[in-house]
Image (cartoon, rainbow, N blue to C red; front, side, top):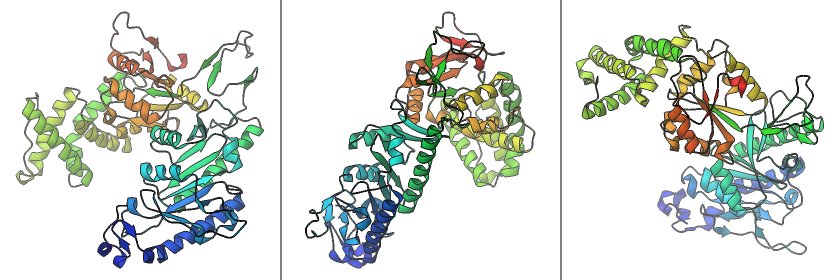
Length: 507
């Protein structure tokens, strides 16, 4: 166990390579022991743990010790949760080795044993820097995994958690890796693992998720679809649930006797320019606005931390451009020359970058900040094609998660969809990707998006774009691709081989 030297921590109670008895008996450790036993009794009364199932573990919070090296206390296996006592806890090092075990109790108690969940708990500590982990066996967390055995996720009004086959550590690792932001993993027919920065965070999340599981079960019992925001009736055809599927229906609204079930995509990723939004809006409105207001924006916000960061990025980009002989790049003078001279050189560089339609972070970040001012002052309004709001609403109701992937910054994307000619459409969107994930014409960018979304396979994602090279790159990554044909879009190569649509409503 790698821990700080005795002189560095708590007056010598921790020793290099070992933990002193004085530290094991310290106030911090005693309080953590008592807290775990108290929570075990509370979880028992809530029905989250019964018999000897489930458990909880937490780190001993000590600001003098780096979090990865803090001691870990873990409830034992084989002890009735409502009768758990502080002295029943195991003490482990930050790496997972047992430092202290509870003393055996007289018959009929079994010999002490560390939690069978210890390897899974340790993965949450090591992979997510957790401060506490809870494993619940609440019946609702088991039942929600049985409602539809084919599902790989639990969804209820956009709360998403992973479902994997019960046991073992490898499956938990895969779930954590597939969903980098999740703090909850369901184990089918078994229970749930929840972690947080602290025991308070883990406990709060456990309470919220058990509430959602119970709500999902009750909605299902009422014949309502708990996986979509409007909770409409569950539609069944010959025993098949229409959630995440589409069924051919006749004009009269009855199901065709030769109905065909086609799976919906799990996720849809949308380009903006030429796909959701006319190219003319970007080229004739957004770009000119940014170009015409660079000087005004920089002058008004020059001393702010945000603008100084923008200038720092631009300086770095221009230095690289000058070394490479990029047309239009001009040196940016030092601050000593004066604010006006710096701004004038920045304006010249930005105008050249916009004219060349460069897809670089320094430009996109500054443009986003300029556009934000324009939207706030009602000088700009986002534009989307007429079919876009209806399609977004439909996909949202079906539980399909929709994302945006654009060369514009994520701030710019939020501004466009938050201030459109059809109102705020961000409620239908689950996330935004920009060139931080990679160039839109490179296959690896779509591989990164696939891994970020955590789908079972790339073909679960449908990508819509108007650019042939982007379509080719996404297809090479395994995504389903449709090319958007909109007014003002450029021509496609002959025999391009992609399906095309003139409206999202055709999808």
